[in-house]
Image (cartoon, rainbow, N blue to C red; front, side, top):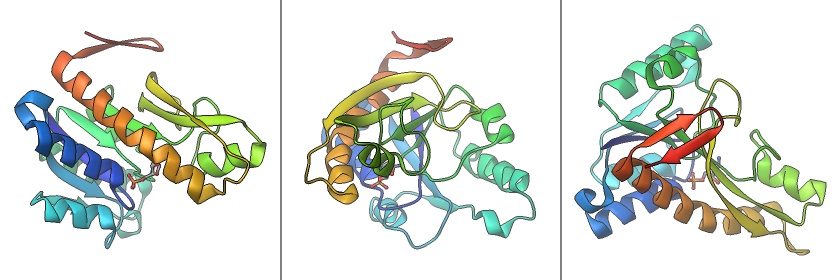
Length: 202
Ligand code: GRF
């Protein structure tokens, strides 16, 4: 299976996928990353892709007159690589109608909280501020909402009294990277069905 990974930052989830595929081989893993896309230049995620010899593309919202044009351009750029699955790994933009029309049901996102709790761009900070005792990460399919698509897998992380946002996020990311690598491999190898809110991996 062909994966396109979308990033906006450090790309450690991307790196975890790259390392896993490198370790077991794309045949055994069931997928290869064919390109990495981003919404901004100069991020470590793009540097990681370039170090791995992967093609990259950048679609910046401000380069387009309207949000819909950005969305269509992102869809075009992604489509060029003929992906089977798109993995949004720390991609900090909400994809729109055009992108979902083209790839709906094939876009996997990872979120650093236990959805439906704490959706949005500050899930780690919100869980901490709320005084939750556990949080975690969620790997889900993207639908036309924000962090509302069918859940594929979740991992739980304790919140410690001494946690600040970055310490907690780092601990979440350790669980998240393992979860994402496992889920993407299973989706790619086994195939899956989305039945309402349920995801069935064959
Ligand atoms: C991940 O925790 C992701 O869930 C969140 O931002 C982080 C991205 O980390 N949206 P990285 O860019 O993969 O290191």
